[in-house]
Image (cartoon, rainbow, N blue to C red; front, side, top):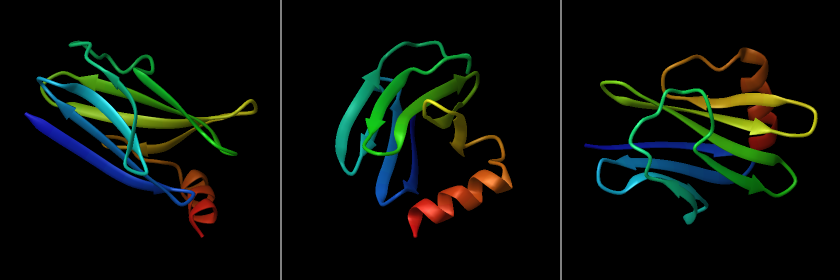
Length: 103
């Protein structure tokens, strides 16, 4: 089974892929930034982290039960924001913040 999620964050194209054989992979602007092959994910901690210049750290938190879902947080010294999720809603204030970053 193969899954893929894409989104824009401050002029960066973020792509996350998951495959039963190759595991979870994080790409930023087409470059592989991290991967993880752990078979069990409960959605409690980040499997992959990658620094984005001048923004903070992207943290990919997978959840796998019958299907694989992901949440992505942008973490800085001051806060941690859910910037993307394949299964839960991103807050309106965060959506507005992302829109400002993307413009």
